Length: 345
Length: 271
Image 1: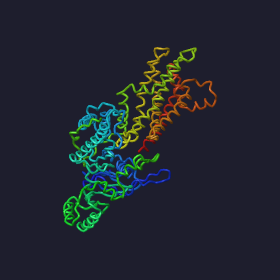
Image 2: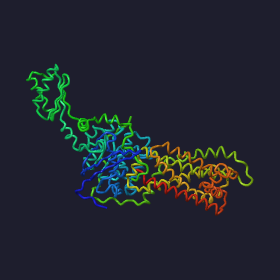
Image 3: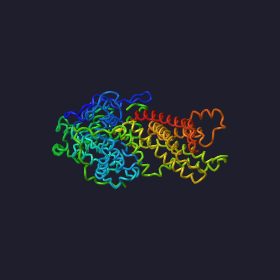
Image 4: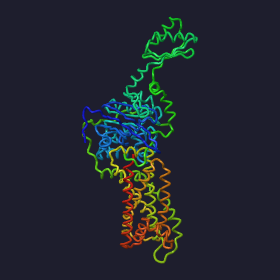
C-alpha cells in the first residue's frame, strides 16, 4: 500500500471512463474524466439526471469498477486498493444509510465497529453524533418511523462515524423540504469550514451548487464541460440587463446605441420594445447606460437587472436549460441506474 | 410536518489525513459485527420471529387434529418435527426480503462502501438465521408439549443443531436471490414462493410419501429437506439411528455449503 503524500491531491482521475451495456447498446456514462481535487476543497458535481455524476461518484467510492482509466482517492487506487479507499472515505448515498428495521443508535455503533472503533469508542461516538445532529431522542425508534429530514441527518451522521477527511455525498438534499435542505447545506458547509473536511457532492439543484460549493464541476453527457467557482462561472457570462422603451423605433435606436456605448463584450438583442443586454458587470454599467440613452433621446421606461445563474451558464454551455433537462429526464430510467447482472465490483 | 432542528454543534475532531488508518477488524470481527447488526432488530422486537411462523402454526392448529391415530406413539410426535423444519425453511427463505428492503432503501449500498468484507456481509447474515430458528423451535415445542408430545430434550437439541446448517444454507440462498433480484421485490417473492412449497411437500412434511408414485418418490429423494426431516423425526421420537442422522446432517451440511458458495458469489458481485 502506498502512503498518502502531503502534496498529492485527495482525488486524481486520469481518463476515467465507464460504459454500461444493456441489450447490445453501449452507453458511455462517463467519458475520459481527468480531475483533481485538492485537500480541503468543497466541490459540487452539477449536471442533469443521467449526466454521469453519480456514476463518477460510484467509481470514486469503489462501488463501480471503471471500464478504463484510473482514479486515486485519498492516496489509494480505487480498484487495487479498494479496502483502503473504503476505510479512508465517508459516504452518504442517495438512499438511507440506516436499515429501516434498525434503530439509529445501533446503526451508528455497528458502523463504528466496522471502522475498527472499540465497543466503548463506538458507543461514545454514536452519542456524540446523535447529539450533534439532534437525534438523541429518536435514537431508539425504528428508522422507518423517522421523518425524511431525521433520516437524512442520520445518513450524514453514519457517514461521519469514523471522522473521515474526505466525504462523498450523492444528491444529499434530494427529497428534502426547503427548510431541511437549508439545514443540511449549512451542516455540510460548517463541516467543511470548521474541520477542513474535503467534500465532494453531486447535485442537480443549481441553487445548492451555488450556495455551498467553492468549486462547481459541470458535467454533461459524461464529460466535464466547466470547472470553476460558481461566481467566476457566472461572471464570465455577465449580467442580463433588460430595458423597456415607448416604441419599437426607440428600442431599435437604443439597441444600436447600446452596442456603440458598450462595445465588444456585450451582447445586445431587441424584441419588440424590449432590448436585452448581456454584459460583464452589467449591473454596474446599467445606470450609465440608462443616462446615456436618455441623453441620446431614447429614454428607458423600464429596467431590470439579473445576474447570471448557473442555469444560464449551463444553457450557454449546452444550449439546454438544466432545469428543463431535469424535468425531461426525471422518471426515465437514466444511465445512473443501469447496472449489469453479475458484474464484479 | 417534519420537525426541523437547528444543528448547533459540528461533530467533533477529525483525524488528520496523514495519520495511519485505525487497525482494521479481521474477517471474524466483521462477521460478528454483521451478525449482531442483523440480530438487533430481532432482539428489539422478538415478536417479529412470529411472522415466519404464521403458516406453520396454522398447519399445526388445523392440520394436526386431522392426523390419523397411529398405533404406537402419537401422530403429533411425527408431525411436529416436520413443522419445525417447515418453520426453519420459511423463516430462512423469507430472510432475503430484509436484504431486498436494504437494497431498495440504501443501507446495503452504505455497507458495501464500508470496510466490511463482502464475505462477512453474507456469512454474518446467514449465521444469524440460527437464532430465530431456535426461538421458533422453542415456541413450537412449548406449544405442543402439553398435548400428546413427549419431549426428549437432548434429542431435540441435537435436532436443532442439525437444522442449523439447513437454516444457514437456505438463508444464504435467500440472500443470494435478494442480491440477484436487486430492487425488484416481486422477483424475489415469486421465486421464493415458487420454490418453497414444492420443497416442503416433496419432503413429506405434511403427508408421508410412502404411498406416492415412483416419480414423486424419486423427486423426494433428490430433496435435501427429505433427509433433514427424516433425521428430525427420528430424533424427536427419542431415537438415534446413526445412518438416518448422518444422512440428515449430511444433507443439512450440503445445503449450508451450497448456500454459502452461491451467496458469497452473489455478494462479491454486488454493487
